[in-house]
Image (cartoon, rainbow, N blue to C red):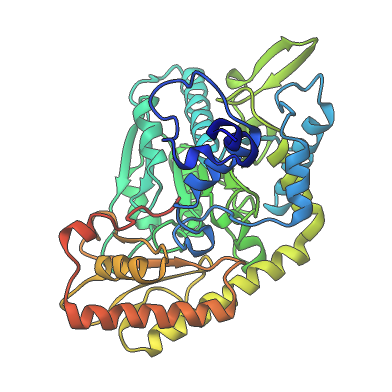
Length: 454
């Protein structure tokens, strides 16, 4: 039998021929070969179950995966053809509004993730500010937005892309969130809003939303400036309602006008799905809503993207009805219990200082070396990856806390108590190796995962 015939019979020709990478291939291959080619590439990636850097969901139930697979062909934006998908989106919005204690009828939408939701929410802040200024015959030049150094970079992107002055409140060592005393000096008549984070990507804590709300209510009364709060709940929006239900950060506070949350983080859905919810319908600037006749139906759209799959919307609804408040609380408490176990293990080792585990926090452990060593947190991250394949980010905090370098391990529902103990031992073993050999080489350090895993 010829070599070509053998290839037809046994396949796997990509094992001896380089995979297409530079030019469009002239010929194709069998479906099985194409599938295995991609699989062979992906096997060299990191193991998602050992990725303790990403907030993004890496596991869903088989039933949810089936819903996703069976609906990948549905274009969510085609409401005329897929009206049930559109209705399910609005069901999710209403459920989130209820979860966040909206006082009455509201509005919102699904997005590709929190980054799009933040862009849309911040645009609405700018447009509503402009409406108020025009109504009072005042200038609409030089809008500004106030937020802390603990926000994600998307907030700075918004300011650059949409011509808004960023007024960034710096952090400080041992102060990794912001409060009213930090915000007040930056406020004026051109402030379109204040951003408060619930569940920061750096240490997992939340800004003092209650204090900021009290400040802004006072300013509204004394100076007739109505400055709204947008809560960036990308990570914390699906955690605080279940772990800390009595903690006020949402629409229970008067000045909180909009909230974004990532369904693909602690909403427990695969990427990408995010949500934007307004306190009231009037908080959405109507100039941002487009009414269009598309494929036979007039739709009101409020989005930066257009065509997108319906699968993740349906998967989010699946989780809501599958878990309910009781189920989400169970999952969050399970993750929190294991996070506390890891924090105790690291603290008891005597090597590490655990940051803020006595405060309301995401299910994660932020920690740093205690005392002086010949190596630092970046070296541990590299050694841990090299020895056992764990992906744990090491990074410095934002200004003015940049002298503080930390490690951060997310504890998700796939990380069992047995794996917590294994991780603890692997961290100890990595430190023991560094005790013997000293710091990692600069080349090794350059490969450390530094991002905050947004």
